[in-house]
Length: 84
Image (cartoon, rainbow, N blue to C red; front, side, top):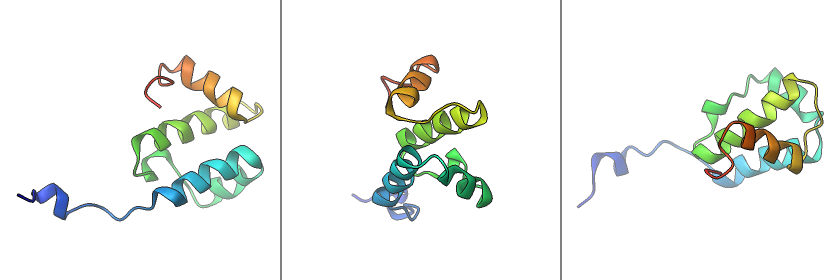
């Protein structure tokens, strides 16, 4: 039987979310654009993507380099690495 939650699935595109995150990892300057459009972790449909973006934003705010290692370290500090 189909539940009400299945019917009311919000629009989302996981590939687009991955693209946003990969773009930030490849070119940290994209964060200026993301700030300009007010992108926030809650804009991501997949919870793990929101956690990754939250870690990226924390590094950006602290003016640290954003790459796979620093994001993984930030997720570890937030006890979210195993979740992601």
